[in-house]
Length: 129
Image 1 (cartoon, rainbow, N blue to C red):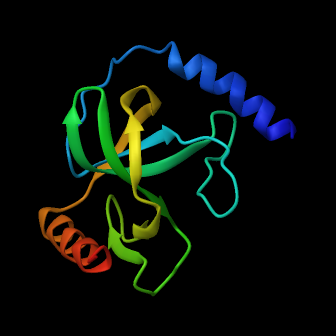
Image 2: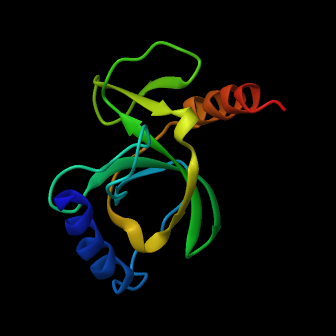
């Protein structure tokens, strides 16, 4: 319960931040993703941070993002790519969700055009209804 209580305090602080960052699709940010329940991805550290790819920007306040992990997962729910170095990251396609821009902490990179196109293709396949 302590993590949830602490996250609640961080969330209150996050809500007061304002909207100082200008973000674009394909960019990767550490964001305050929080302490979540069950199998939902959590952030880590003092501000519950996790890297997230901006998939679709709706306006300067709101976007759809995909949390990232460094844990190797080779399945239909993960998309492997690299940015900034030879180290691989994995977009967790099953964890796609909407985020408020107040959660943005700092930009850490950008996905290549080719990888972004391939990720969107994989996501369309995964979400076929």
